[in-house]
Length: 219
Length: 221
Image (cartoon, rainbow over all chains, first blue to last red; front, top):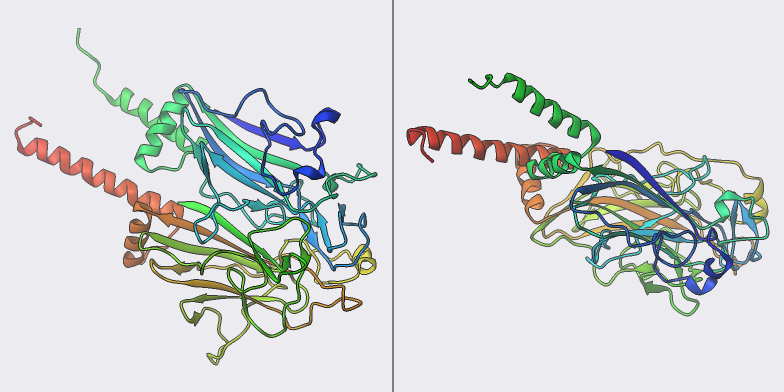
């Protein structure tokens, strides 16, 4: 089992695939969305892999008052327009196969976790008030994705890119269980036990103990 | 069971006070003071299609609520027609102030002009924790009500201030909702750990009864 991380930045790709205002309001995959840094194929688990997503985060947002000039900066966030919203007004949704994980209370899929609740990067100005618990399980053979949606134009980049929080970025932290660890993860799932490295190790120990406690076979 | 979040802001289009879901470059809307607005269907900002409610096979545990710390903002939880937060004399109150549970965490209680925000270094932390959690039983309607005590007007009438509210809850559905109800009957706190614990005890019980059945049959299944 291995702790894994995927960080996405909307401006990391070559110029042709950099994020633009035209993407505002559209859910875009951080893996294969065609903007920023991407990977070669959709994120998926093989038959011998099990993924547990433990955290997702996206660039934060801050509200002030309407009427401030576009391009103003507060706490490292830029106002794209004059509506008083600083930052990208970004959300991140987790999708397993074709199912969105986060729903509104009317059971309709929503945009996901707001960057104001789960900011990336974190700072004393922007602290999380959301933790992804229970974790999200990606079973063997499933495709998973993280989709970023923004609702503020002009705020994803500025003439002063040194401001970290001014970039549109997203983050996913997950643990990859492969080989025998994935089998154990499946077993724990059947048993209704949370899948985490501690419980996988505990299951291994019980297997070893039961093996050593068994009487030796006679010749 | 799934961890869920709902975020509300007083942002909508220029010619509408509220919109279903969110819209690009939305502008802040005025929220009349000292009135409670349902963040789901209150008619201001981003709303959803119908009142928030649980079906017969759903159970919701509200774990956190928060709102903007300025303009005297507060959030109240209402289950059916009953407000959760009350004064000691059992009269109504606005609920949890944004100062006690700020959203976003680390934001300031100073609202308004950019010139003030640029020099303001206040970083508020939460002093309120929603524990024990609030349970929404199957078939109940719940509301998260936002209210503010100060008009959301900045330096001039056109400088409407942006406010937000946030609720974090866990949705238990299907068999998990049945287990949540069982835990409620047993007086056990409903959280993902305890639901998993109950599942394990069910599985263990099933295994024990299977072993006992085999033993009573003289060792044959």
